[in-house]
Image 1 (cartoon, rainbow, N blue to C red):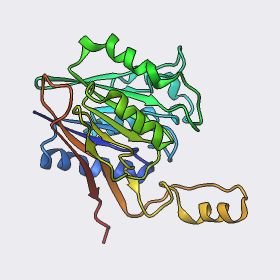
Image 2 (cartoon, one colour):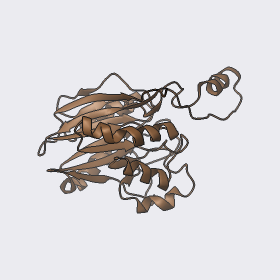
Image 3 (cartoon, helix red, strand yellow):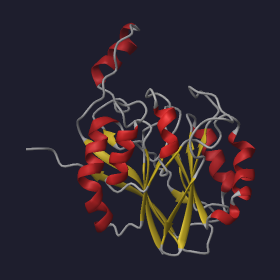
Image 4 (cartoon, rainbow, N blue to C red):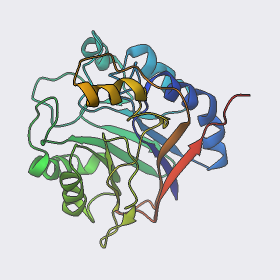
Length: 264
């Protein structure tokens, strides 16, 4: 039985520090075999860099996924090809750099990791996830034993639909992007673990990881201002699931949270 932790969007320095300082102990305490994390907000709340990807990997993150902010940091499109533990959304337009999926191995299990970028209200365009993901899984069936599918999308309907679409074909369908952990974690009838949003790994005294005051003022007066990354009440949020080699679904699927102790 493999125990796997997926961490929702790592946000800014606070999120990175929490991973660096606490993930090694979490891996031991939870008896984790693999850790996967979305890293697309790790650099100042928007994008990721080579240095940050290396830092997260060195802290115990086996695989790093990305979303609509994957190219926000200048030059990362040149660096991603040399990072074998990072994958960008599989349905970006043809010619986009980087791996389309990962295969992470632990004893007796090859876990495929793939991100489907949503179509509705997203900041960058991509090819349709439906039905491309079905064909993609068929093409790579021999490469891995089962799949962690991340659905990185804005609307709950698109993420829920993806869960039902892939139920019974993959171990999990885990939603990201909206940064708010949802209360709908469940194992669907055919065995696939699903949650609409795993939440973020970062500062929860915030508005989606950003300082509260400038965003509230923006809603009041409509004036542009810089949205700085917050730093208080840091939590790591995600899900832990268990996979039995030889089975497509998962044996257990539970929300996970770790509250970083306040200093002093």
